[in-house]
Amino acid sequence: MPHRRCLIAALALLAAPAVVAHAAEPMGLADEKPLEVKGKVVDLLCELTGDCPQGCGQGRRQLGILTADGRLVAAAKGAVFFAGAVPDLLPLCGREVHADGLLVENPAMTLYLVQYLKPSPEAGFVPADAFLAAWKAQNGEAEEWWRADPTVKAVIGQTGVLGVPGLKPE
Image 1 (cartoon, rainbow, N blue to C red):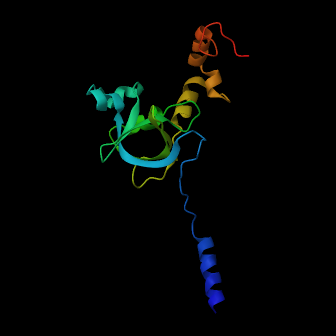
Image 2: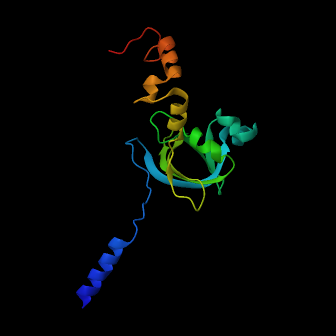
Image 3: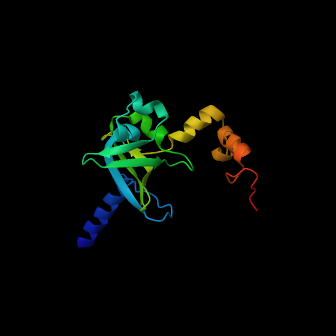
């Protein structure tokens, strides 16, 4: 009989809906560690200087998360290659959020790479990839957005691929 109970319990577990746990995906960066952060989305410059335009600077300023214990976490990157977290965080300006990502603590600077956001307690986690949808709406489809971006192309045209005019990669 004990085997039958174990079999029934195992079948019940298989029939239960799967719970997807979101955990930050490692990127192989030095000093990275997975970290979930809960707090209010804030304009970093506002928090540091008191210069506080409405709406967290309307997307023209760096955003972060202010935790309940007063820690200010700079959200430097979203889940899209070479893109920041501002498009994901801006609609949540001034609101509580739950973020899942990687904290990169380096003696020079500490940054948070947001991979998933949970915009409210009852919501599920969603990828922090709003930048790509906004970019596509403005510029169209591209396999690698950073190679097709008109602003990136203009900067490369002025300063060269390596950021030094006239210097070419080997």
